[in-house]
Each structure stands twice: as C-alpha cells, then as structure tokens.
Image (cartoon, helix red, strand yellow):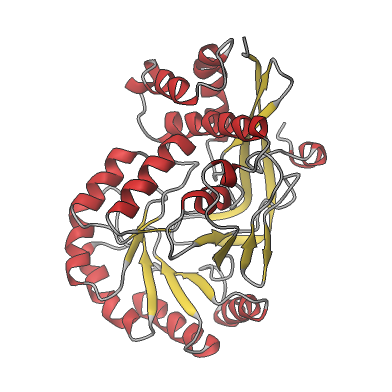
Length: 366
C-alpha cells in the first residue's frame, strides 16, 4: 500500500530587499517554515507557510502532533487526512492560527503529491480554467517610505507593466494618508487601478470618515479597514461605503468566511491558502464566495506560488487576479513567472512548492 514514510520540517529566513512597514509591523525578513512528506513510491511533497514570527511553532506543531497522524497513512486520502488532523486534539487548542496554519502546510504538501502523481501542474488537476492571470503589485507602497520614495517605487511598478498597484495607509495621521493617496494618484494617472490597505488599524467611525476622501481618488478597494473578526462592523461599513471592502488574510476558516458573506460584510474575499487549513479548505471558501458573487482575490502569504494554481484552476470568469509579492523568488525551484503584470502558469507537475537545495543553504535558520 502506498504510504507516508517520513516527514521533516525546517525553516528558512529570507532577507527582504529593503526594510518595509505597514500600520502594524516593521520587518527585514520573511520567514518560510517548510514541511516535506516522503512517500513509499519515492515522491516528496512540499508544503510551506509564510509569516513574520512564530514559524518555529508551526514546525513544532507538525513534528509533535501531526506527524504521528501522517506516518503510514495513504497520502492519496487527502480529505480523510484533513479530517483526522482537524478533529485531533489540536482542535481544542486552535481552530485558527498556529494549528490551522500547520495543517495548511501538510495539506499543501499532500496536494503537491497528488499533482505530481497525476503528472499535472496543480492548476490543471483542479480543472485548468486559466493559464494566465492578472496580478496587482503590493510591494511598492509601504508606510516607512517617504513621499518621494513612495511615488518613485510605485511608478517603477507601473513602468514595469503593472496596471494595478496597492499602497499602505493607516498611519497615525489620517490627513497624511490622504495626501499620500492623492500624490500617488496624480503620479500614476487615472488609468491605473489603485487599492489601499489599512491593515486593521481603523475603527468604524474613522473608516466611515476616510472612505469618502479615498473615493475622490478612485480607490478600487479598501483592504482590512477594521479588526479582522469584526463582522458586524464590516457589515455596517459596507452599507455606507462607495468603495468595495476587501478582507480575508486574517480569517482562518470556512465558517467565518461564510458568516462574513451571509452578513454582507465583505465584497472581495482574500482567502489565503496558508492561513486557512490548506488547499482543501481554500477550495471550499472560494467556491462558496463565488456562488454569492464575491470576487476571490487571494492574499499572497505563499508569495503566489500556490495561489497561481488555485485561481488558475477554479477562478471565475472575472476577475482572474492574484496579488504579486516577490520576497521569496529565490526559495523555489520554479518561482512564479510574471511578465508585464501577467502571471504565466507553469506546466511542471506539482504545486510549484519544491525548495531549491541552494536556498536551504542560504536561508536555513539555525
């Protein structure tokens, strides 16, 4: 019988090209915990996550709690394994956060194995709907940039072919946020799509006051304006907002996404495969959101590697779009390919998660 023979984890700490800051964090490195699942037919499935801190906790969770469930299991029984992990004792200490993210790493590795065994890239295994995706660039609008750096960075992205860009707001002075949005809009012109990301820093009153000002500069969406668990607040905001509201990178399970949708508390669903419990749960969220006419535009905690397959496999007719963040291109054997703002999907079997041997030498955490 085909079975899981071995499971190993390790951590990579990837330096950023420059320090970055949003309304919550200032960071210099992106942390990538990795799990590799070895099967009796000689294949290796790779799963991983991406985060600022706590990567050691994810690996410890896999080693101590999830590995004993995996060993000797048939890796093809993905949904059965998902259920065993979800309803294991971990269920009582975390149906979100660390437990869910550790489960995600394992689930991604199992889907990587399934695609390899089928001889297909994951997006084709899932249905093969789109082989090209629009991207928006979110790596040019950080709050620690002064105004000149901000404008130069975003206009460089536009000159490189991106017609969709995102910038950070949520600083200590709301008037400065508006001035920065105005300056960026004037610099990029009216034809470039501009989004803003608050990273949870506003309350409802502040958001209701700010959105009319942002609308003056044709902002396409406002991302995470409020606390990510505040369903009631987001619903109240959407009732009065002229700008679509996006959220999801800090929503950890299908049930909470269902509540946001049922209460009309989200317009753009940014479900992240590294935050929910893997590809298995991501598919549930995406399909439910599309059934309710919501856009599904994932947050790229995976640096696009996996989401290109998910959106390419099950994406709606429109929009067919993912977030582009280039922080971990040197980690993977087959890094995501983007040309003139268009993601070109791979044809190599698997989920594009395999880590370069050289990357382990360069970025391995002691």
